[in-house]
Image 1 (cartoon, rainbow, N blue to C red):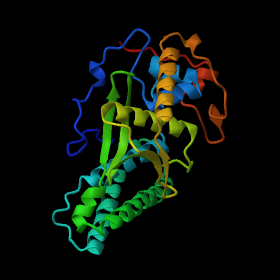
Image 2: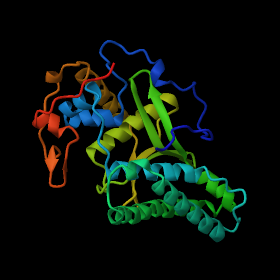
Image 3: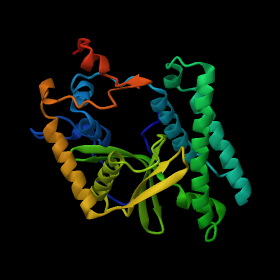
Image 4: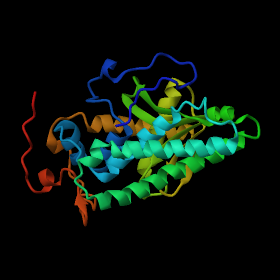
Length: 303
């Protein structure tokens, strides 16, 4: 799993970070929410209940496992010490691409999540090749951004200027919501919050937009309103950005408040099923399908 510790992130001065454990929750708030938990509740309240109130885990999948590999690879990549890398731009970028691919190979081979899936070597190889292309798509994107700064700065200074803050946690004591931001770019006086996605959907869905809106709210609460938020779609190798507006942040506040009000009850009957094609499809089913639709009893919870 990717570490969420970050030692070298340089962000504007702000108050000391808030920890989730330190938050005192008001009566109408059952837990600190996140973009993923809010989107789960909006998609299907019953699924939310099974996961957060019944405590049932998410089942492992190739998509979750390789997403973890990609995030940990990119986090480690940007931690690379470039002191001894050649200064010549072409040699520097070639060396860094080799470093990236070696990090990816190691993260993939050491992933316990991947090993637990029970997939054949042939099946895993297909996903390995596809995921490796995703990582290299991001490298090409980052290289293009770096070359722009090469017009003004030496190679290593350009690299440092473009390198983002990574896997930064933000916690709101006011709205009782948290989020981990994959990358925060501060370039030419503009702040961009970017999330990586390995999914096939290469456009910003309403779910993604809500996630990004909550990130904008979290960043504004700690620093200021960011200029842009967006998704880098690793499979397609493309970036989609949204201008951040006050209306976007206000919508995030409303969505968070609605989620808190709708999830304060521990009673399963307060979380209706929302049947959809996401319940069961040709190659799989919801993690909680057997409990929700087939009557499988819940496991006893250990106190």
